[in-house]
Length: 247
Image 1 (cartoon, rainbow, N blue to C red):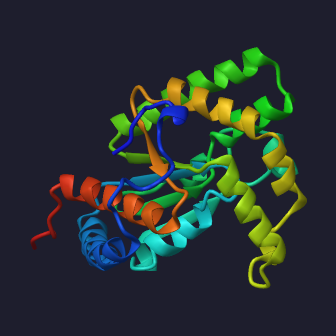
Image 2: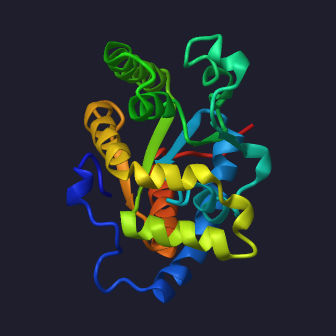
Image 3: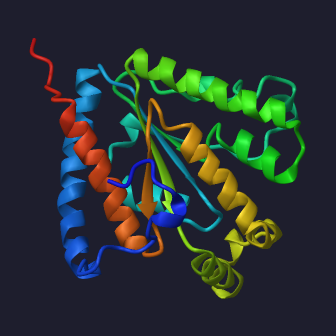
């Protein structure tokens, strides 16, 4: 597991010798395990699971959710995407929209983007004073520590791709008939600000890893990204030593 390392020192590629064919075969087994573990999680009703997915545009947040969680029971899993704050959300504290979406015991809650967007975007776009953004780092750390103390299991995944891989994926969105709907001009704007986004993510990973470490996922190869995330989640759930309730 790649935890709390510099992005520049972490490869975006699978380890040498690891093949797509081999991991696709293992993925079938991971899906079976994840299905079974989620069943026990839901039945036992003790542990809330919060999974955060962050990464550059085109890093594969949607794809990870689609491929990793295709095996789970929808009754025990929710997904929330955090986009540009609505006018109503802007009238409140930046965490206001987060609290109603936290998981209850026995549930898996997936955040497609998260409260970290409220550090990332204001920093890149320079729409908030530095002191306000620094306070948000502290607030988020306290928030996550409180969740952990109360029993929530938090997994924070950063989907790590290169600038070159992002460019290829944006081009595929522009040209692919089944992908054009995903393309937005904001993709190109974000790509042009790659270095700034990268430096902010470096700081986020450095400053927000003390209590809940970030897991850096090599994501230039989608098949490895999916396997890596699924394997990490399965191991975390296995560590909970869950059991079906006995009447």
